[in-house]
Image (cartoon, rainbow, N blue to C red; front, top):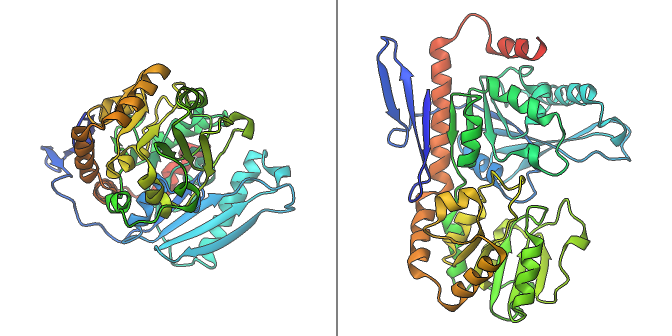
Amino acid sequence: MSMSYCETSGKIATTTFETDGADGERILRNITRETPETDGFSIIVHSRLQWDWVWQRPQQFLSRLSRRHPVLYIETLPPSPELKAPRTAIRRIKEYNVTVLQMQFPLSVWHHEDYVDRERRNMLLAALHGPLAGEFDSPIQWFYDPMAVTAFGGYIKSRAIVYDCMNEFSQFRGAPPEIVEREKLLLSFADVVFTGGCRLWEAKRHFNPNCHFYGCGVDVEHFSCANDKSLPLPEDIRHIAKPILGYFGVVDERLDHALIEKMAMAHPEWNIVMVGPTIKIGASALSKQPNIHWLGARPYAELPAYARAFDVCLIPYTLNETTEYINPTKTLEYMATARPIVSSSLADVVSHFFKVVEIGHSHTAFIEQCEKALRKPNQTKIHRGLEMANANTWDKIVSELEAHVQYALDRKQRRVSAQPYVGQVSEMLVN
C-alpha cells in the first residue's frame, strides 16, 4: 500500500511505498531518496484542457515527461454546429516531444454518448495505425478527464493506467452528471492515482490504495524574472498607476467577484489588475469599477513581466463547492516573484502555505491584509516563500511521479498473469 501525508511547511508532500517482497518481507522504500531508472515508455494523455490554453499542471508535467517519453496529447474541442462529421487533426509541438491529436464533433451528435465514445476510440486507433504508427505502442494511458474513461479505458492496449486528479470536476458549473460514476470507474482500475490537493487525496484514496498527493510545482527560474528590473513591462500595464494588486489565472465563477469590487470601492487609489481568460461567465459578471483592469488572456511566457508590476499578488477565490478542493498553481508562482500574497481562506492554502500567505477569512479581513501588505511587506514570509518555491519545482515533482509510474510497471511485471491487462480492464467496463 502507499502512504502520503501533507505537511504545513517546506516540502509539500512526501510519499513512501510499502510493498510485499518475494519472500513476504515488507519493504519500505522512500522514492524521494531513491529514484529508479525508468524505461522508455510512451504516454497517451486524455485531457479536458487544450494544450495551447492556459499553461497548467498537465502541460507542466507532460512537457517535462516528454524529455524521456514521447507524449500523445488528445484534446477534444467544443462541438461545432457547422460540422457534418467528426474531424481530427494532428500537429507536433516543436519545443517538446509532444504530439497533439485534436478531435471535434458536430453539435448534433455530441449528446449521443455511446456514439461519441466509439468515434473517439476509432479516431485514436486510426491515428495509431496510420500517421502515428509505431510511435506509441504499448503506452501508459494518462487521464486528466474522467469522462474519457468509457471511450479509452480498457480498449487501448496499454501497460498501465494513471489518473492525475486536478480537481473535483463534478462540482464545476456545467459538469456532466455522469462524471461521478465515470471517475469511480477510473479510480477502481487505475494503477497509480495522483491528486493536486491534500483534500482531494483524502477523498480519492478510499477508492484506490495507490493514491498519492502531489501539489503543483513552480518554474522558479521563469517567475523569478519578475525581480529583474531590466525586464520590460507590458504595454497594457506600463501606464497603470501604483499600487497595483494583481492576479493571473482563469477568470471564472470561482473568483469572488463581490470581493474584488469591494476592494476597488474601498480603495479607489488602488489599481486591481486581472490577467487571464474569461470562461463560463458573461461580461456582466465583471465589475465596471474604473480601477479594475480586466486584461484578458496573456501567454505564459509574459506572466513574469506582468507580475513585475504587482505590489501584491491576489488569490481572491470565493468559498463554495467549486473551490472546496482547489490548490492553486499560482500560489508557488507568486512566491517565486518575491511579492506579498493575500488569499481567501481556501482549505489547502491555509493548510500548506499559512507561513507565507496572508489569509483573509472575510471580505473585510482580506482588504485589511492587502492594506498591511502594501504598507509593510513581510520580508520574512517573502523569504520563506522563495525557499518553499525552490523546494517544490516542477522538475522535482515530475521525477517523483515518474518513479511511481515505473514502480507500478515493475510491480505489474513481477505479478503479470497469462491474461493481458487490457482484457481485465475491458471486462470491468462491459460487465
